[in-house]
Each structure stands twice: as C-alpha cells, then as structure tokens.
Length: 293
Image (cartoon, rainbow, N blue to C red):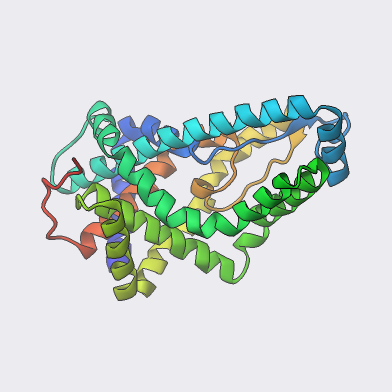
C-alpha cells in the first residue's frame, strides 16, 4: 500500500506541478555526459580503441583541452543539478503540508541546501565509484596515453552496459535509494550529512525490501519516460547524424543525450517527489518547519 501511495502521489504532484518541470530539466542535466556524434557516411569516430588511441596520439594538446572543457562543463551541470534536486525535494515536501512553492521559491530553497546534498553525494556515491576512478587514475598516472585510452574505454563499456546486469541492478538501486533517503534526511530533517547517511542506513535496514521495491518501481518507470527520446533519435537520424545513441534505463543516473535531459524534466520531478513521499511515510513526525541552515 505504501508503495502504491508513493507512486500515485508522485505522479499527481508531477502532473500538477508543470511550473517545476524546468527545474527538473536542470536536475537532469547533472546526468548529461558527452555523446560522440558523427556523419553517417563518414569514418566512425571513436568506434574502436585503435581509433581513440590514434586521435589522442596525433593531437594530445587538443585532446587534453577538450577533456578539461568537458570536465568543467559536466561539473557545472552537476552543481546546478544539486541545487535543482534540493528545490524539487522542498517543493514536494511543501505540497504534502498543503503549501505550494513557486519555482523561484523552490530554487532559493535549493540554493540554501545544495552544499549538504553535495556532501551526501560525495559520502555515498564516491565510495561506490572509487574502484572505477582508481583504475582510470592509475592508467593516466602511467603517462601512457594509449594505455589510458584503452582502460578508460573498457571502464566506460562496463559502466554503460555490464553494471546493469544481474546483481549489479540491485546494487545500483540500493546505492541510489540510500543516497536519496540520506538527501531527504539532510534537506527535510535538517541533519548533518554524516548523520543523514547514518539515518538512511537505519531506514534501509528496517525497510530494505520495501525501499528496494520503490527503487525498482522508479527504475521501471524511467524506461517508460525514455520513450520521449524516440522522436529525437529518429529526427537526428533523418538529418544524417548517428553515433552512440542508446535508450538506457534510469536516465536519472546514466549517460544521456543533452536533449534527453531537457525532455526528461518531468521524470526528475516524479523521481524527486516519489523519494520525498517515501521518506515522509517512514518519518511522518518530522516537523514541517525543519530546515538546513
């Protein structure tokens, strides 16, 4: 019953909160990464490790510059998405208390709490990604661009395909459920980041099966929301562009096409409100005036 109420309430909030969809678009931009596009009749760009190594070897300065620009852009999008996430959480929680926040009010609230969300992310997601980061760092430290490119390509292949098979699906859902509950403890409950993380662990321990069910439901819902990308992909194909386009599950935390981030704004609102409502079901007594200073 709790799961059904959570999903239905989140859907209703998303449908009646169109003014927050642009905020959702910004939240989705935190997941937007680089997508390589090429002319259909041209030579495949980055189609193999050999092509990637050759490009890096011939233009190492350009490659390094583009990498820096890309990283700065991705980091900027990520910070904006953290503000947007806080805004959506506060707006969804206000709706539960019969209060309505405008997009501007929600955004100002997100500006107050974004540092706490960043801290929660670093304390939950970074440890999970540490092995992958270590592999890339070791390859780069060897100062062998060919080896770095090869290892990086293998890591990206793993992240975009293998991680969502078998047990890894459950692991990914569990990690993100932990993170999302910790964010609510920090934003709504006013707890410090480490306290929020410990509280989220307690939530997961007490309600693991039900919380995983919520995460799995949102995982499936994300597949349905990605259908809005189909016209975009067909349009790109019609003008002769192709590349590594793919429809992948749970675009809130995967590599996505930039137009997809824009079109999937409503999904970000739905996802943020669903986890907020689930948190409220677990902690209904938390004061509505709780805030992060």
